Image (cartoon, rainbow, N blue to C red; front, side, top):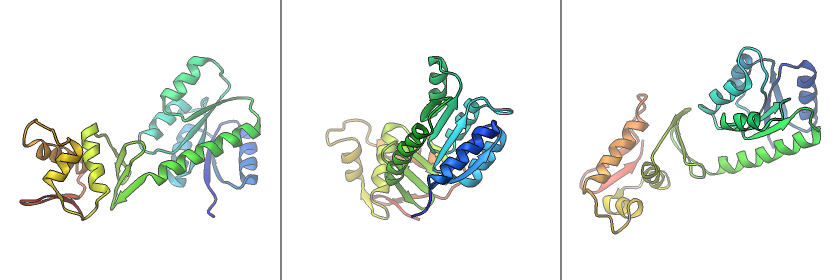
Length: 224
């Protein structure tokens, strides 16, 4: 089985070396960075399964790096800090951190938290459906074209979910309306066309190829 990859970002050489040694011994593939800028580059290159991130970093601190990373990837982040105040933990979680560990910590606890984050990551991966460069996480309701995150409304997501669970199948207007809006929908008759327009705009906003195609007189289909 392929070793899971972990990136450690910490400016303390002793802690960085200890974590690299311990995580490697535990069977993980480990890369490291000593500041926030380098941390961004290493994460983008390595595409790890978990990131261990210190808060107090030179150049780009852990809070800002965490926030920037979470805008483009969904990798679990375990934040390390010497600060044990509630406001600091809340700030870290608000930036997108998945877990928080205060220094000094027991190595056994850090390894246990890494295992929990890996289980969550695996569950999310298994919930991700893909079609060409489109990725839809059915559990977290997140959507990407390649690495570009796309924000959808609840109805837009429900509509896209129907397409990606029935790729290359022509879905009739009736099927789409009944599933997404319900049999008793009494709103505008062109609501489906409006939402298809919304979806196409968001999915093609960066110049990507069209995936949702019209089948005249029948409905729509998700295809190349």
